[in-house]
Length: 364
Image 1: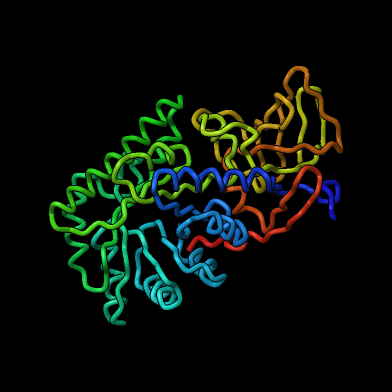
Image 2: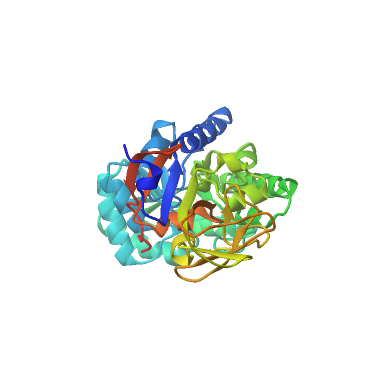
């Protein structure tokens, strides 16, 4: 069996014990609230991890793009939700091919104009595509405002070739909250707003089967709100530096790290590792900026990145030496996974698995 010292750096490591514990905990949180769990696979893009999630009780998977759905469908996953406003007849034709192979498929929409580009293809094929209406509960990215949901949903329900299955949202604004109480308040607003929108649609005679919420920081509190039927967290499988800073988890709950080598110590207050923006990403720490990665066992953080260099500002009491290997907790694990062709599952110093990041680069 390979050991950590056999791996060339930089390389992504996943602690298998922590990974499985994270998967089991979120599955139990959903079960205890009688909510379906549909994890967002864009976090890991790895078939084996998706299988672990389904085996633990997930109803199916969420993905971000049609191409991600194609990868997971090819591997035998049969219940997928493309949680993104899909637009265009070209993508509709690919969705039609997917629908022939899947037991259950749905896609996100947030406009009648976008949905109509899908409806025509399915109508001509005498097929029906399930869609979910995206509702904006405060992130101000995509989605209709809650007060416009009834009008839009009514028009969607009238489009031949489509069936409105329900509504979904993502309360990403929780990542900007500096205290756990603030994250909880966002989560409660997320769940209660979605339940209220669903009630309004039903009163208007529009069927709503699914009320789906998302986001790892808000997941547990949001899915505890009456009326929520589904939850789509993604980052929880790995967690990362931002989740620790938000109070979502502790450091020991973080499964993904980057193993890197110190390649230069040009000054007492500076060291450089072989992991730059092409390895760690340049995503900032949330909710407050704080470098680009925490060095395990040290106070020092990576404070500057270029493509292949991670520059550590050495804190008082820390020392580094050329050739030393360090493990880095990244700010945002989802992006790190997409930057690498493969990752390694480890327990302590033993390398137990090597997984391809199967849906890496599937952004279309």
